[in-house]
Length: 180
Image (cartoon, rainbow, N blue to C red; front, side, top):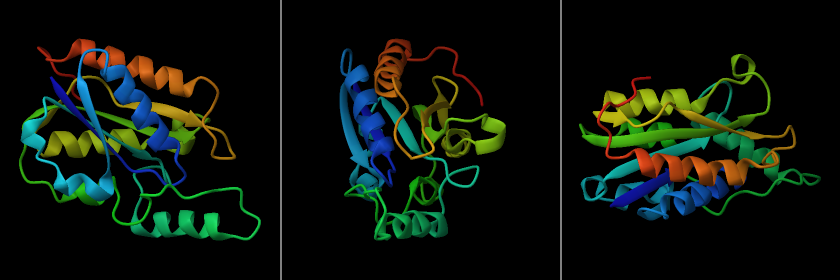
């Protein structure tokens, strides 16, 4: 079974989680981990499972303006933030909005600040909605992974992402897909 994990990452957190999810899936699946900047190069029909993740910006998926703001924050002289090597370009929202009708099984994840979801929003909910809109069935409810106020992954999130990937891999193929 072949899985494709597409991620958008500004500061490397979502990238690290995508790698961890891939390791978790790798216990049962072969998993390709691909930044959204290279997602158009992939033949989605060649994969049995699609996992898509991105950061939460302003209560949802990133937009061009929020990605530019994140890049500007990293460019500040006193910033401790570092851009992910594949941070430039379109985000997950843009890529998903450009997809034609699809079918298959998918899952969505995000990173968000460690605060109530009502306050932070959840990009994974929007990702899941767009995945369903183009025809994917969700294997699990959208999943959030937490970062601190300093945009560092919270303790234990890498391990939690790996466990989520393993659990996801054990569920697919899906007989009763989750609806968001």
